[in-house]
Structures are given as C-alpha cells and as structure tokens.
Image (cartoon, rainbow, N blue to C red; front, side, top):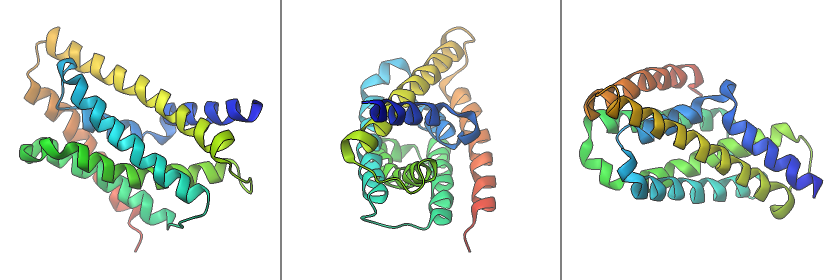
Amino acid sequence: MDQFYIFLNQGFFHILDLHGYDHILFLFAICAIYNFKDWKRIFWIVTSFTIAHSITLALCALDIIAVNGEFIEFLIAFTILFTCIENLFIPKLHNYRVLFSGFFGLVHGMGFSRLLKELFLGMKFNAFTTLLPFNIGLELGQIIIISAIMVIIYILKNHLKLSSKVITYSISVPVLIQSAIWMWQRFPF
C-alpha cells in the first residue's frame, strides 16, 4: 500500500507544482468562458479530458505506444494556444469543447507519462499500484485547481463586476502569449 500512496502523492503534487504550470494555464484557458452555473458543462469537459489522458498515460507508461517527448511538449503548448484562440475568436466551437478536450487529453496524457517515467526511471509500472494512484492524484489536484479558478472567476464577476468578455480576455490573452512562447521554445524541428 505504500507504493500506492507514493504514486498518489506524486500525481497530486505534480499537477500543483508551479514549475510545471503549463497544465494549470490550460485549465485556466478551459474555464475562462464559464461561470459556476456551468458546472455540469465543466464536469463533462474535464471528464472527457480525464478519460483521454488516462488512456494515453497508461499506454505510454506501459510501453504499448512510444512518443517523441519534444513533439508532445510542443503539442501541449498548441492545445493551450488553440483553447485560447477558441475562447477569443471562435465561440461557435464552444459547443464542441468536450470533443476538443478529449483529444487534447490524449496529448496531455502522453506528457504525463513522460514525467511519470522520468520520476521513476527504470521502474516497472503496474496499472493498480502505480498508474491508478498517480492518475487519481492528478485528478484530485486538477479538481482543486479548477475549483480555485472558478472561485477567482466568481470574484471577478460578482465582486469586481467584470463582464464575462473582460474575464475571458484577461485570462485568455496572457495564456495565449505564454503558449505561443512555449510553442516557439519547444518547436521540435
């Protein structure tokens, strides 16, 4: 059971680690267009992302598929950039966010698997004692992050009286700029 808690802890603290804040910014980009009343939509978007990244996390960690880590890091930055562009300029795609989120989850799962392999170099992974607790830890951390983001959006909207459009732009523009910088830095070719 010790191994379960070690991997649970690693997953939880990885997602909350501010040194790897690309995923946190991705969650900000996803949530930027929503309010508390949209909790069901957020739930389905995050569930789609979670299921998808769980699949690729397992497939990569168990060496069923192999990926180019540099290319995956570039694609992670692209998923963030695309989400911001969608927020700002393509509102018609908001209804398809569950699908995009699922696809983007596949990419992020490959990135999480790379981290998992780096953390536990040379270790054999077991679906129930390593992958499952790591993934549960990621999800618990993600719930905390999304909850904090939604509280921030609530405060901005209800206490500072900012409009939804101002909030969306205030979140999406800086995140878009950072993701473009990452894409430039991570360009694999």
